[in-house]
Image 1 (tube, rainbow, N blue to C red):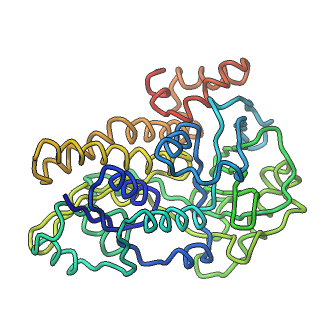
Image 2: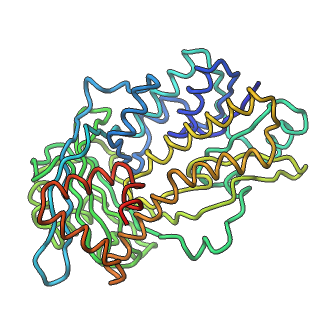
Length: 395
């Protein structure tokens, strides 16, 4: 069996390593060398909650245990306008961590090459994919690129354009952040969410401070898209206005490097898992290509990890049974991922959105107030953040 994976993000690289472990012939396509990844601009911070970190450890991809700062406690603070904050602090069901994606993806790519995986460093085009399919070069081609020309092969699901949650993202990596009430701090407001997370960068331990704002609202650091801004200065101004406690923790901190600031916009939109090429051949979409998650969930790498492991299981089972890697196979693999991860994570996003819209269910309101009043309930809330299916099953 021969598989091609286009894209070297969390899901693509994890699946490539997993298939290599199973003695599948895997070829990985990416348009960046490890050095380009390491020294490029920062990417949106992804958190490895305890279950995600455990999954990486089980497959031998946790390369940073001896260096990365860990978090075991978390806080959630709701900041209504002109009212006192309300929230809680709790313990996660284990230790989590975060690693600068530049460092993490570069290391995984190097490791895949060193272990005997074949890496192609160039951007793949639709016509090239079409030739591969027509020539029968691979049994299965998986697209894990996120967007662009290849992402456009996968049509939007009906109604998903309207269901997307667009966000204005501003993020910085800072050295010298003072400790807060918990290792991982989250603030939710009517205008968006603010995260402060300990992270390992290529320069050592630091903190990622991350704003996920509703478009054109007061937390949006660049509502005028034609204007160039200093992302660090704009972020600090929002912290000073909306979260003066976080501002004080970060006031004396400095950027870790010149590429440590991000200012972008995202619009997650669900796409169909099967992409059709001009010849009629098919490719399978994975991860952010077809199931991007709203940054507010903090579940990006959890989702990518679960997608890789789910697809691995389906690929190996199909190969064992001698079945074809056809459209039915592709839909089954993605549907399994939807059922066990995407649907619970989407329910979590809906809960966050409903908190400020006044549409939060009585059960969800009660769960929040219990967490404020009861430390055990607070711990249970953060356990469910690590495993969103618990939010659904608790209803």
